[in-house]
Structure formats: C-alpha cells, structure tokens
Length: 352
Image (cartoon, rainbow, N blue to C red; front, side, top):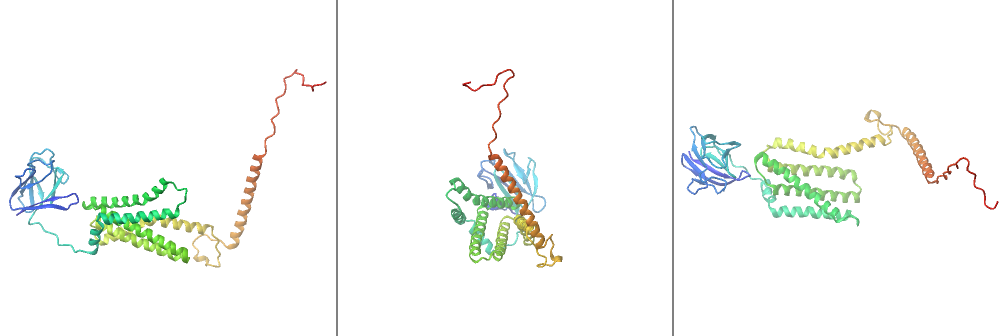
C-alpha cells in the first residue's frame, strides 16, 4: 500500500501530491522529512503517518509540536490516533490530505459548455468589463432621469447602489460555496451577478421604449415579467452549480423556492393594487355575471350615488376649512383697559 500525501489549498484544490511506497512517512518543515511543508507555523518534524492495522486506515502521531495538529476539528494528542483514508490534517496554516493507493477514485466528469463559461467568468478582465458595462448603464439612467438639482453625493450614491448589490450577491454565493464544499470563486460569482443585472437593466430599458412608442403596455409587461423569470432562473442555476453539489432535481426545487422569495414582494404589490382597484372601481353587473364576481361589487347606479355623497362631503369640508382660514385672518378686537381704581376722578377734557 502506497501512502499518498496531498497539499490542499483553502478551496480544496490539490496544490502538490506525492506518493510514498513505505509503511511510515514523516511530515514537517525540515528538508530531511519525506514530505516537506514550507510553513513557518509547522514544526521541523511535525507528523508521522503510519499504515494502520486494517486496509485504508492510518495512524497519525503528533510529535509534541508547538501549534499542534488537528484531524478535522479534533486536536491530536501525543498518542497515535487512527484515521481513515481521505482524511484531512491541519498543521499550522497548512492542510494535507492522507490517502492510500487502494482507495477508489471517482470517474471523470464530462466537460460541458457551463464549465467553459465558468472559466470565462473567472477571468478578472471579463469581470471588470461586465462591471464597467453595468456602471455605464447606471450612469446613463442617472443622466437621463436627473435634473440640475442633483448633488454630486446623490449622483455617486445612485451609481454605487447597483455595485453594492452585486458585491453582496457574489459574497452570499461565495459563502455558500465555502460552507458546502469549501470552494470559493468570488470573481466568477461577481461576473454572473453583474451579467444578470446588465441583461435585466437592458431588457427593462428596451421594453420601456417599445411600450411608450407602441402603447402595448399589458402584453409587454407580461413578456418583461416572463423574461426576467428566465434570466433569474438561469442565473440561479449557474450560481448553484458553481457553489454547491446539489443534484439537478433538488437544484430545480431550490430554484423555484428562490424565485418565489424574489418575486413574492412584486406579486404582493400587484395583488394589493388589484384589490384596491376592485374596492374602488365601479363594476357593472351587466358586464360580468354575478356568479363570476368573486369580490364585493356594485352597480353603476350605486357607485354614482356614493360618488355624489363623497363629493358633497368634500365640498362641505372645503367650505369649513375656508371659513376657518378667514377667521384666522380677521384681526382680534382691542383688549379693553382695566378699570381705574375707586375714588380716582376720571380724566376731564383739557380746556374746561
């Protein structure tokens, strides 16, 4: 049985790998170790790994080191500890994975177009280009919708808000990947979020131009809602495949849950607006049969009668406010002086 040692990075990628045809090896910073680790927090002779009594097992011995050794979350003592093949040891700030040649190896995974897209999205130049496109789009929107009274601080805030949202989105998915499978690719997540934002903003502007010029408000609003749903589903699919190992069936369920959460507030606003419309708009029972009217409706005559009463009350309220305002404008009468003390003679006119 050969002992295989892998130097593992923070994202679980193998940085270095060596195979030893021996029953016992030493790991440490000194050059005469079997596997040398260049980490100042690792002792010169840190670990000894020996083959176990049963297949695919090892005995891990910490050599009374300064910073100790951990097997997963468990700190190793001076006595040899049993471990299974594929375990990860943490020494200093370094992680090493120990396995044997008899361990089963997973079959190769098929390359897809999504994998090529991830390589493209992980490029820093691509990420900066997509972010620049989003920033230019936001600048254009602020420019055409602002007036001369907009202060530089407000202008800067309007430009930084989309960037802050993208950073939070990318950080969220990176944290999910870190907890699920210790794989972090913040740049790729940021590119996906920025690309999604740019597509949605460009689509919204295009549909707004078409709706204003062709007056197709209802149809294009529905198409906009469906298109955004497709874009968000594709974005969530990319984030999930990059950050998790969820199988396709469960991934689809998770996508639907995220979509519900994302659209629950807009749907609530639409339903609330429709309820208010049903509550105040006039309904004529001749346009729709009563059994098909699920809300409290009224005839046109009832609505006109209530409208006349409301108008009368509004006119009366306006008249009362006008009278109150006039009374406030009238100057108050002069306050009479206090009466003179008793026994004092009243002032007589001069010249008598």
